[in-house]
Image 1 (cartoon, rainbow, N blue to C red):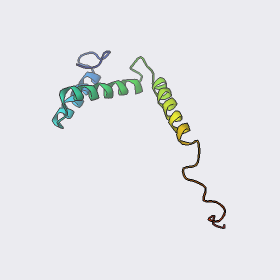
Image 2: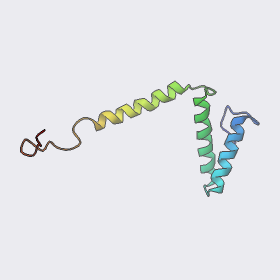
Image 3: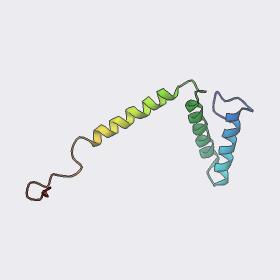
Image 4: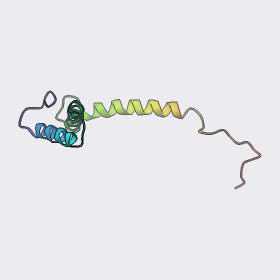
Length: 90
């Protein structure tokens, strides 16, 4: 069953069925194939502006999480300063 908001016979409904069948042929479980297909169709609908949530909102959510992760990683140097004795001259 395609995600909510996707009507029978539409391009997205066909896309959903195609993805689901391809995943089943690859050996994925029925439920897993349905979930991946629905997520993929929803992502494409958002990118093309068909879904209620806009691409900007999805990107904003993604960027917020990305910037948080970046801030957590960039609090200090990745390795300790070797000190003046080990520094190379230019």
